[in-house]
Image (cartoon, rainbow, N blue to C red; front, top):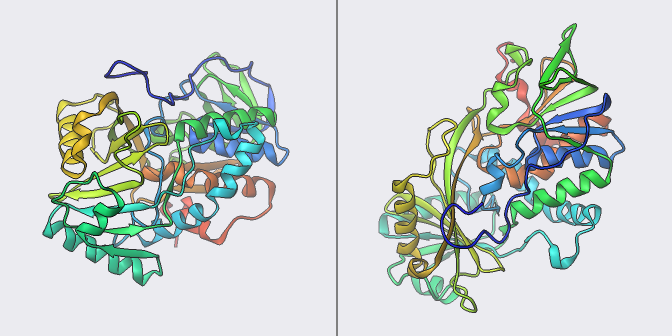
Length: 404
């Protein structure tokens, strides 16, 4: 799993090994075994539905390299109010979600999910960056968020290792974080303990008389089901068998991320830091085990997973401008993955024009944060238990040509 450096990441992604023999019939087939698909499978199985999860490579999704920031407050931007509303609803229920996953997976406090309320500190590298931060602060306050403007000295009192040149910041206390790799491992265990079956193969959707009736595996074997959930992330628009008018408008957005190891016994950072350095975004996410995750690259590069020297250089340079001590950290891992973007940055979760086919995709940078809420919505639609009102923001029918 190590791309660079001498030791593996502390929490490598669950491997794509094993998997049970495909059943002939289940209540629901979930295509995609990432954080969203695994959450859907677990929540469906928890409500008594028989579930099969089909994924030929469940380590390929963006979740495997995600930083795990649960930060609807500090990620708020003008024009993103709907994304914020959805993210805030997910964040409010995340602690209960994590507790239920831990209970069903049998995990103990010693093997928890890295869920911590550390808060976020948004920083400005110079006066121009501070003006941008102040603009966002006005929007945060207008929406009733708890956000506090801090001067440079106050920022350094909170985080003494910050660069002295930092121009100021905004503290958002309610933001929190989770370790996505641990979360997915626990979700898969929890789903399995509830009876969900993992099939290590990709599959195409079976449609008969205009209705989704299951999936077909590469060898020709079929799994019949009353519902198919499309949760294949950036690949969702490429799944065979889905009628053209039901294919989600999802596109891959490449992101590159780095994992460092902070010096033992001397944590450089205690809370999530998001910074703007000469107009460029960078984030730093510290883990309790000493890992420090760096990221923020966004590229229109399709499914390319090449780690580029330029991105590595830019991330290290901008991180060092915020936290100089990163230059002395061990470089453990560098990876790239495609995130599932959508035309309006909102996910697509819900019914399609094809009966029996549900979408759970297009989560872009928010898949980990929205995974619990997405699973709740999908399970509610399947069981008829109802869904939260905020789920209307993610209704896939908003992209249909005949939509009002």
